[in-house]
Length: 326
Image 1: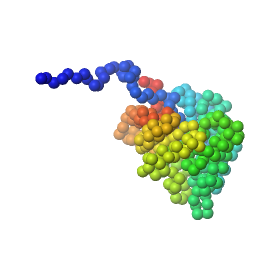
Image 2: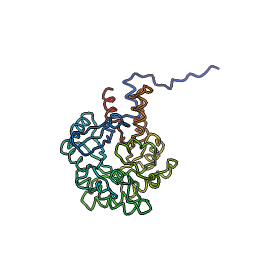
Image 3: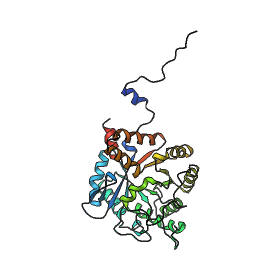
Image 4: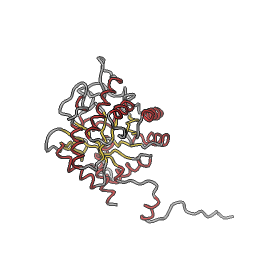
């Protein structure tokens, strides 16, 4: 009795056939590009901890948006660096706030660009926390909701196509949905930062946006990295309150959570490839330790494979160029 003959399990195909049978595809249209806008004129300052990412003044945005559209990227998220900060983060909901000005400028220069606005107060408060504080320094959840709703409405009035609350206050999706509806913006979708961990991967962003807490940290209202089931509870609550899309942040260290959220609810789920993930790749590539192109595309593909319908990433421009090269 001889050994049975098995057909080979590995497909012997050329590159063209491999593209045909590939299970997961990555495209420039999958990317949302985050960027930082600041006061002034003629400003384009590279962020030291995020090579290739810049703080830009509003007059620089037209060229930036046209470059993105030429690369096939049509979704952006502006983060504002205000000229002044106060205890209540009033710059976040001011009609002439830095993000509101940026949105108007983008919509005039490139009407086809889809603008998603982050809804939070941390970049605008003098204390760096995501909400109003009581005398003991704790965030006042319910009092903060009214301000978050004002932020969202002001952004949509300026021309934002979607809002994305990132504060992690309880009930903020419902409050924002009610405020948008009352203002007549019933068709504006909400991308909820439903699963946002208290992560060490946010450092470069906080440098770029000058949004680090002046004291303490945000563990009281962001999630414990040890918890996965909590992510499902948070996502379910946001769906019940009216979220149209969900987000998992960070992405790379939480691919298991991303997949679980997507598989459990079947809702469009966005992965945030955060600043620390970006900075690590850039640093390793600068030292010649990794092939940047290969690692970036492999990383982004892993997020798509885990279930992301879109990826918020600072790698977007480079990745789009590499994908266009084939």
